[in-house]
Image 1 (cartoon, one colour):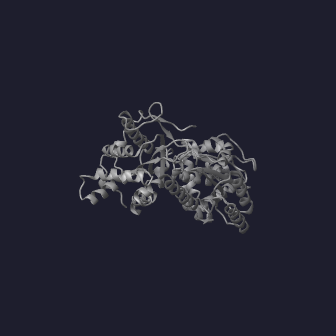
Image 2: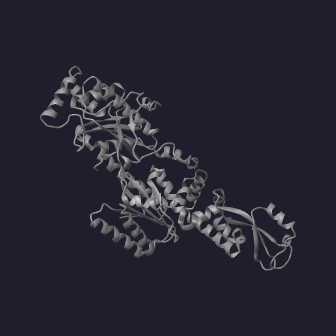
Image 3: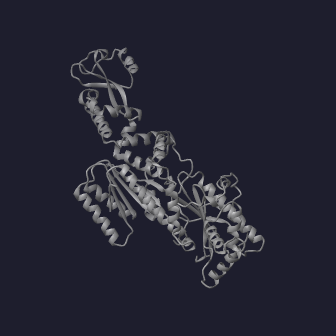
Length: 526
């Protein structure tokens, strides 16, 4: 999954000023990819580096005077696990902009600090040129970097207004979040959910002791231990009348039973002393299990974790209020595109389908993800497919995904986020395509794809998955390509050109001097 973040600077640089900027950045161990490729071409044309500067100046003058287009429209700076870019937006209605950004992946450390350091370097170069009289600007004082404005859909705002604050508070509590994540992952196993529901019914009906005997224990023996470790079930002591078999009461431990027996308490059914009644060990669902199974809360918790795992910021996720009929809802804002997630631990019924359609119409979400763990009723499927068809025919950019479990929904969401990411990358970097003669966004995507870990390396990473669950808060904020700074209107990594110390030069702590202004305030697919 690729991420992108950028800032803008209201300033115009002429052609020679842009070339001087790239040259000074190269002296700071930031090698411009496009300009280096051009210089390499000029070197081959002239069979030597002696007059490369002259041919570059001549080609730049021809492009700007004859072809009426900028010779330098921007550039890329490729490092090991991230890429900086600069784009000169001359066609803005308000004022020309210099857009500086960072493309990175989840394993990139401190991406925002790296971007701030890069912007500081660019700004220092601009100030140097300004002091020397190389550039002119009407702005008072030094130019300031601005965070780009990201769109928030009105439907997402309305959804947040009625967000389930109790559910949100529970999901954010560090002391319980790890337990809920582990428990929700276990509840993806249908047998575990069946056992817990059977245990709850057994307690209500008074036959909890039978869960540990006969066929029941053989059917769920492999799950009981894991459920206990996750805090979903606990062992208690049950006292039953020997004559009637009626359950009298349950106690958390055998020590508590000793307190009752020495008190000369008697059975309410037969009048015998409690010490003479039948004592058995039983399994009881915990409060955590009850809260997760109620209204399919475990499914929403699991989907919430999958979104966070893919890098969606907490601020861009909203959990809707519980409907009281087993339905769950959640929204995510990705680059102004709203994802509506509807979940039900049960069949995809016509009633659930109609409710999902109503919610989609209310929020005007561009992506509808419906997750139901049970059977898909024919009528429900027809209702959803017809709705998706009508939305597309009406001219909306609409996508619908049906999934039968959280893992499938997570995979489909990852693919959808990647499509959004690729679209934003193309939008941000398409100005550079003509400068290098190929798709820059595709070049960047391919670079990161080739650098992804192999299957063996991914297997080693999975060994630490349990410890990863204990990391309740991410080490750094991540912003999906969805959060790229856009206008308000709106393998060949070149290691040979990169100095080894380039990466380290942007991991420093001196970022307080930056003059920045913070941003205000498959299942089936149709």
